Length: 101
Image (cartoon, rainbow, N blue to C red; front, side, top):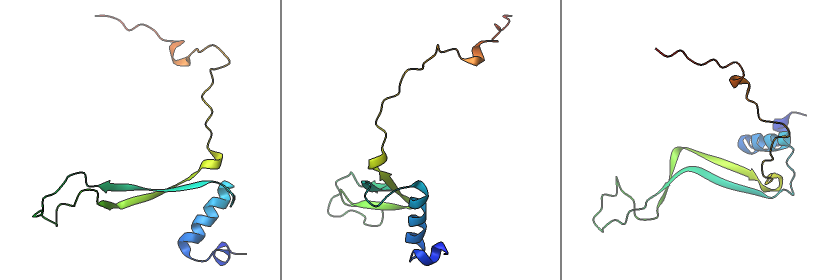
């Protein structure tokens, strides 16, 4: 069956297909966040220029704003482990001292 038939709506259908490819399940703990935004941090007086300035705390979404979907159920919080061998970088093995002039 064509994927577009199974999932109604272009955006929701594409999202559902991507989530299936990742192996996410309906019971997963998911967080949705919006990036590419800005919040006014300046207190404006009453006679501020509304075309160029916003009141304190107003959120604006940039034209290139994006959505971040995090699967918190699959978040790996383990710390990095030390290597099981001696650290010997390959780029230092054949290093020759540079001649001094």
